Image (cartoon, rainbow, N blue to C red; front, side, top):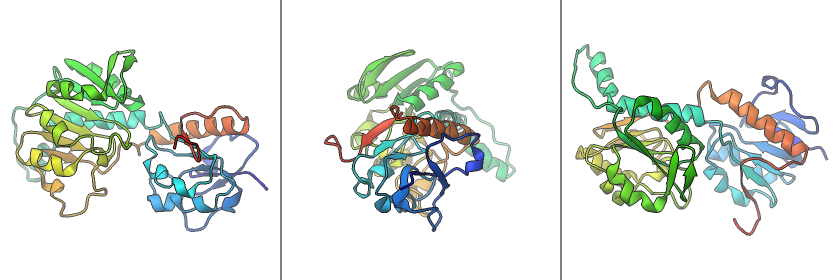
Length: 316
């Protein structure tokens, strides 16, 4: 039996792949590139529907590694019952840090400085000035201080923010200062002018930004979500937007894609981008580096990077 590696990036894009595997290109097409039973390493197609990405899994009896090209792995966790035991599920930590952090800053600045209103006025050929808040001197709270959260802070510093507070699942020290545990959110939320959410979607974070969370945010605060849509309770957010007490900038929504006619589209004070935090020109070179490094580790039987879980283990 051969050991195949299915890659969603054309093989010609790589300068060199490690020896020891037969490489096949598959980006979610109807036809498989080979026998799924021969696939030992499955690099999951990027930006494809969950049903497409999970389709070959039941036939991948020889699978040993599932490598996503996303930081979040919730779609693969939902398909764990399709994966044989003993498979390492790894995410792409680091691939999207730059792109997602850029978008978080873009959404923050655009919302604060009134850019959506300028676009609407331009379309109507109206010269419409006004006074808008700056990011300078604002207090920013980052909820989800992993690699992306740290990259967001790196980009906030030059904008002369007054303070950055950091929150993660558990408290710890970081190079820039203390990272507070989630349990301290009730104390930190009322102090923040901007709350940027970059946490992974887990059982603990699903619906984290609920009515209680939003009620603790100060009047006039901005919520920015570059995490997953289901981290924010949409039904709880809508009345806060409608009343004008809060504003929001959302790269992700729940439901997603946001259907036509959904009230979130027309809610006042909201800026929506269609889940574009990751897909930029920065993606491909970083994705290739992660894939080559992980494949090299796999063929050399070295410890894999960014292992989220191993299927069939007692901890899952």
